[in-house]
Image (cartoon, rainbow, N blue to C red; front, top):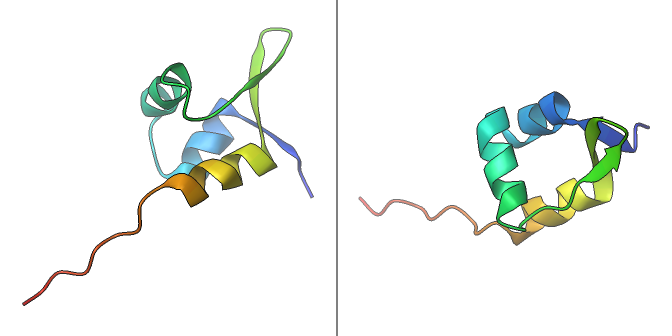
Length: 61
């Protein structure tokens, strides 16, 4: 099991663009790890961020 994910992989997992991921990081909503020039995201941090998102509301017809 992979523990650290790069920007492209993390953005794909979240279904957002790289720019959106960087904006979320800049806002302090997700924490990144730097490995030299690489920005990495720990799997636990990705899961924590996903859990913090509000649930989608059902449309009432």
